[in-house]
Picture 1 (cartoon, helix red, strand yellow):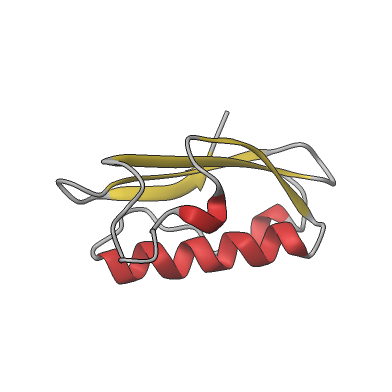
Picture 2 (cartoon, one colour):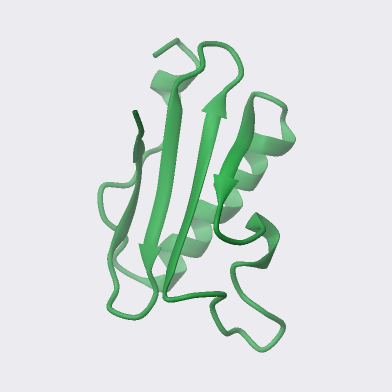
Amino acid sequence: MCERCSQLKLVSCFHSPWEYMQTVEYIKGLISSGDFSLVSGNCPIDEVKDENGKFADDIIYHLIRCETCGQEFSCCVNTYRGGGSFSKGR
């Protein structure tokens, strides 16, 4: 990990849908800054919820990569049972 990665606000466990949505907004900001890139996900990061507020899937995940050092971070949530995290990947 580099200096940029070490400053990320990681979340060990999502305790509410609101906390997950705040993290999605945070990740979108990281990507739009150009410091991180979206590697993969099972839905577009802008579409985790539809216009009616329904989540895209029971399990939603996204993987981002630091453009400086290549470290990956994953954000995964279980929208049906709760839980998930934003943590250091591989």
